[in-house]
Length: 506
Image (tube, rainbow, N blue to C red; front, side, top):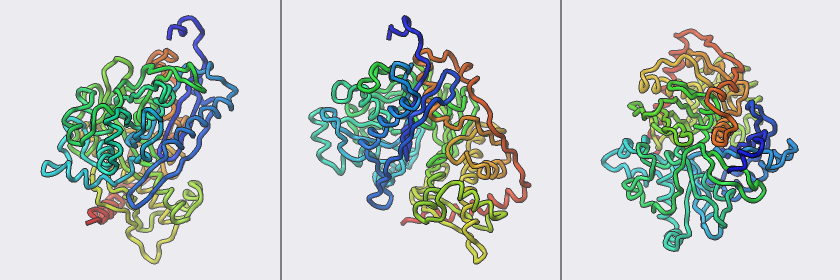
């Protein structure tokens, strides 16, 4: 990359955010301002209850379209880009043939629960925390390792591909970077510490694949990518982006942590996308949870020490709004949901537990299922809409309480981002339930911005965390407005509803 010392630094950074429902490319200037943006949704494939898949080829095509469209909108060419950063839905797994470049199965989504039996067998008599001291995670359908086990158990052709040295597997970042860096003609098979930490196959103490974990899940080490930092130059892009450094790979929630400038120990953010994800920076040592939270990697910048975080994850936040829209036809837009929710003064005694894929932290009950409780003849669609927004707040409160206990920290402010954070009503409800200030940044695209920050640090586009912090701006602050008695009553009935959703499947 010596040409960077001879030529002026290009003026822009591109970020590719490959999410659960869509793929977007954003181009930022040196102040972290959005220059252009392009996004395209991909199909959610649900062949049977509990199964959620994506088409890796469709995702790749959408990624290439988003990049070229964002460049075209800004009248830019690849030479105008200092680097491309990649962020992605984390636990979703892809298996493909390194010779043909073709996927050998659809991508199995992080939301997918088909591995429940495998997870039960892995836990055995030692329980779901069997590997927690190595992975920081419980054994759960959420994570990638058991998904790879399922593929091998159900598709014998994969064994032959392994024997021939043709099969490789990885999370979506690996799939994209392999293709961008040459694909079957020399593409790099890599991932970063944040994505690797979500497979249940990496030891978070050594930052390497762990033989005990690989053996337990019968995953050959040779099919997995090399583990790198979240911010370094992995390769130069080929094809349409020829010559652009591929300079960051980072899981979407960790990218949002960077995009929210949570660089110091104790800083915390919540992202309201398809799911709800709360991450607290815990510094250079893992903080082991007693409250059912995840201990995971936050990021690693170049050769610097890795930084860890505590995480609380909930599979359905925006997904519950999508369910009301797509499955019930109750609303057609998020704005319409807000209007419905504002048409009533309170929830009318209605509580919605959106446990479509079971309950994640801190309950970890894969047998739970969603329910709407407290219905009377008085309840109407406005109450259900309000209960949907409140569900995200109640789940946040449970996670914040667990994080405070695990970290011995009192949280006074929560930074928020993601699609649901656009709703003033949802954020006011959140502040009311949490009884703390909720801060929404002026730029809500923190996931894309975080991937751009990581890539920019790798190529010298930005110099330091201090410089990055100067590009974060507070947009709006929401303060609590309800009394403690009302808050406690809401939380009591929410917990009652959650209890009724648990162990629903036999």
